[in-house]
Amino acid sequence: MTDPDFVTMESLMQALPDVLAAPRTATPVLQLCFRPGFNQRSFPERLTLTRDAGVPGERFTTAPWLKGPDGRGDPRIQVSILPRRVMDLVWRDRIATPHPGDTIIADLETSEANLPAGTLLGIGSAVIRVSDVFNDGCVKWKARYGKDAKDWITAPGHPPLRLRGILCSVEQDGVIACGDLIHKLD
Image 1: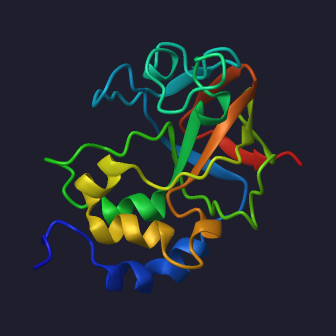
Image 2: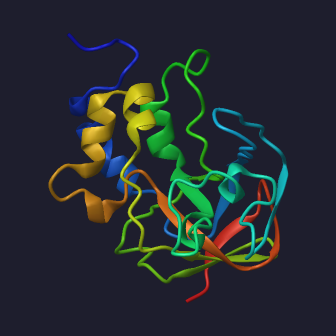
């Protein structure tokens, strides 16, 4: 039996054309999320991004899930962008279930075809680079949004679609704000 709070694979597959029809560039930041610790979130109107710390004060600097050879957080995971259409599909119980925690929510098509690794994105006064690290949806994604939501991301043919969104490094320090347009710079 399927949990009624979880989206079904059938619904996810039916929604795929709409998810892939999202704007490919020049789309606004709809929401920003700041994560100072595990399961902690606030939703500021602005965030500072730096090459050294990603989002200063976030848990990336103290407890990153991916580390480089020096033991510090791998810069390729400093910032995450989740497509709004995916968030709206999977995050059904917005009272009891935590927000996904991605730095940026935007109505953006995040496939490899649209945003290959290395693509530079300008947002506000910051510049970020699309990472080659695949965001496959962690164990928490499955627990919060269901097995089908996790399996959809990694289903045959789906990894290049990057349905869980993209991970990025900060290439130029700056400030981003809700409403700022995300532009491809390449």
